[in-house]
Image (cartoon, rainbow, N blue to C red; front, side, top):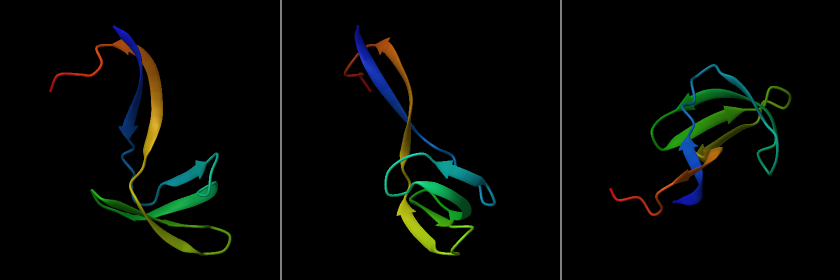
Length: 70
């Protein structure tokens, strides 16, 4: 067993209001479109819209087999 950091894609929903705490995406955003590959966000202050490849979030650290056998 090893200590493994697990990442999970976030299931964005259109109309969702989100806040990103760090990095170049930092700030408040509204989800205005999303599909399996991309998410489109709009800044509520400037109105700027950006399209990014869907990104994952750190969810937890846990002990598990690594690498996993698929």
